[in-house]
Structure formats: C-alpha cells, structure tokens
Image 1 (cartoon, one colour):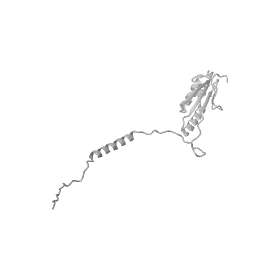
Image 2 (tube, helix red, strand yellow):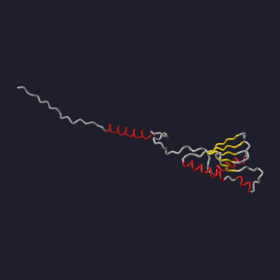
Image 3 (cartoon, rainbow, N blue to C red):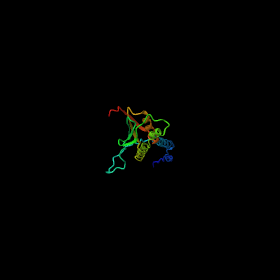
Length: 164
C-alpha cells in the first residue's frame, strides 16, 4: 500500500490589520473639516421681500422737512407755517427785542415732531433749508441753531436768487 504522506501545515493565525494609522488619518480629516467650515462665514443680504398682504407694516417714507428763509428774515416751515417773523438788523444785541426775534420755539417744536416721526419710522430725519440770497445770514445761523437744538443733523442747504 502506498503510504500517504501527511503534510502538516502550520496553523495560520487570523489575519490582522493594523488600523491605528487609518484612525489617525480619519481624526485629522475630521478636525480639518471642522475648522474649515467654521472659517467660512455666510454673508447676510438685506433684501426686502414684498409683502403678500395689502397693508404693509412699514410706514410710507417720511417727507423731508423744508425751511424757507425769506429776504426779510421771516422763516416758513413746510411752506405753510410761519415760525419766525421778519429780522430787524437794527435791533441792539443785548435788547429783549433782539433776543425775542432770534428765538424760534415754534420751529424747534416742529423739528422735534419731525425727529420723533422719523424715530418711529426708524429713519433719519432730513431737513432742507432754502435761504433767499438776500436773507440775513444771522437768520440762517438761527435756523441752524434750532436744528441743533432739535438734534437733527442731516441738513441740505439751498439758496435762491430772490427773484421767485
């Protein structure tokens, strides 16, 4: 009889894979992507989307205030309300008449009302001062002082020739 050769094979161990390097790479990639995404900042676009309702919650834009200084020194608010009488350049600076003609309490109150309306509408109050070319310069200074007292800083200046 033939002899059967028995080949002895060595028992093989279960194959192992060293994955510690792969775990290190995964953690490094994770940290990289976490840091990279936190560096990207999204820009906010201020876009007003039209309302679908018929009534909007935003008030209409506020009309700018108009102050007109006439050639005689009288001051008119928004074309219809006289807030300062004619200016007398001959009045003595320390007299009561001089102080009285330079006071513009009605203009200051009107300007404060405009400022409060603008604050309620969350806008900046805007005032245009239209001075006649022949208007006394002191009257323009008085109007600017009233604007400062009412805390209005956005002012446009305009002069006319006095012919109209």
